[in-house]
Length: 304
Image (cartoon, rainbow, N blue to C red; front, side, top):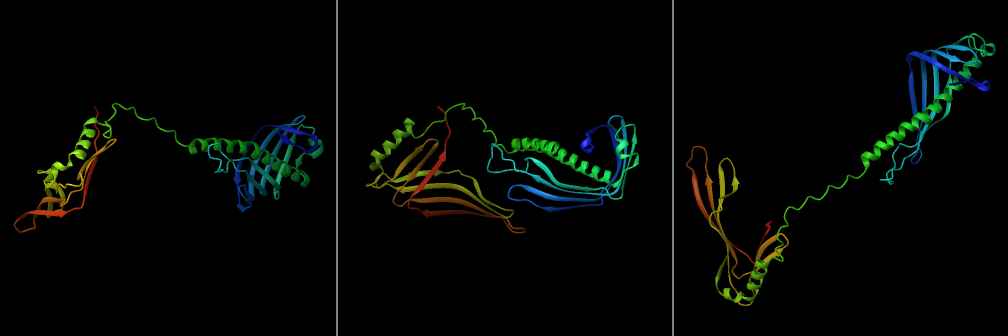
């Protein structure tokens, strides 16, 4: 519908527009706190429209705008989500105010059988009628922004809520078999107590804490140089005044702590050097490092 001042509203049946032209669009920021605001200025607006309406008879309107303009202020309220109220988004109510329009260099022609034509006249409209049309255009735009624009913002707010909701926690995987808790596993408990009570058996004896004779692990590997770990041995001498070694069992962690006099780690490594045009060098190196104490731990997942 289209307002026609104090006489009421004309019902628009159909209409077409073509040849839309916009000379320039300007804006200035009027935002305050969390409310977004912009002053818009549209000038050099040109368009040709043909409108068929009814108001106590047929009303045909032909509009040819050549240099129309419109100024308005658009405001958007913040929107606070239930899931994240501390982060408002610009998807609140949309409104348009301070609208003014000018139909300069424009022509509007009325024809038909409507009683309205007896008042406004047939043919080209007067400047007064052009001002009324400009006011009606502002009213229509304000209503469209406040209704359809706000509805579009609400749809956008709904989509944003879906995107910003915290992800749902994944269900815990089903436990197929419960792994052993080494802290309460009877054989480990027995071994702990045995080492605690019988530590004097190792008094003044050399104890092999760890002895691996076939490691074959590459420590360094380049195009010309290779360093391989072949053997690893951890030894110590038992003492009379302390156990020297203990077994560690905590949930899924299993290991040993060693604190012996003369504790040392011995390694045997193979150094291989192959330079272009030279014979290959293979050298076996034995390295021994003295330690105060040593601790070896690892995760061991077994079921009974």
